[in-house]
Length: 106
Length: 106
DNA sequence: AGGTATACCTCGTGATACGATGTATACAAT
DNA sequence: ATTGTATACATCGTATCACGAGGTATACCT
Image 1 (spheres, each protein chain N blue to C red):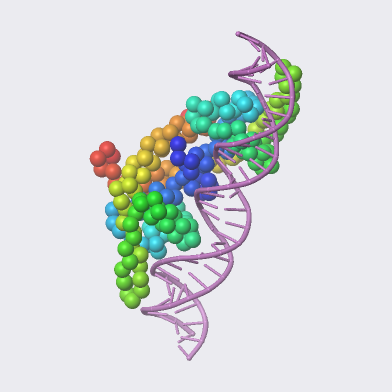
Image 2 (tube, each protein chain N blue to C red):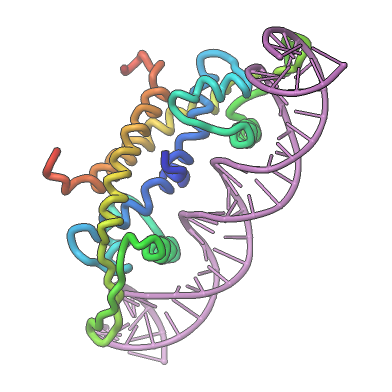
């Protein structure tokens, strides 16, 4: 996908990936893969950013002798998703502007 | 609108604004205003970028004693819009992933 | 011993949106 | 005459950000 288009979805995508169940970095990447590829360096940058913005909290837990960092969404994170839904309406109106003159396939 | 979301639309938006009729900077900003605000510095950056990418051509013409730079879309620019329509399908699938669990209003 | 999967992290770079700022003309209001 | 507003273009510096390259470490299989 076009990287610029992707940008607008990344943060919210990660929030959506931990919304119903706490998750951790490696798994988030796998879960998102069918929808959107993202590298580890990108993900950890995003997770840090979302933590700074208090949209998620972190908890470290041991699993098979290795450490995992589990991320849980906060109320603020949930609100972020709701805001995205509002923004999307505006995106749709812009989308219609861009594609409006295509009489061939309506 | 969220700036990150906006990013993905800006270039294509400008192309769409000159698609049916040649236009110039100041007018493009006005035409896009109902859909998306963009500053002059942003627009001129975009126009330069699109020209470098050969998605539009420029022609200078005098109007009321002042110079105007008219921009015309190229085939490559038109193709860019078509590509956007394809990318949008993927965007929609990601959108559905993000908002899928909202049983309240489907 | 080597390979693969899991799991985390950092650094540097390039792309980019935008505010601030500058130049210049036309025209209306004071 | 001067001030203000609209038109019309342009540049520069800054902050944000995605990502490749590279690093560390464990578990398990061959």
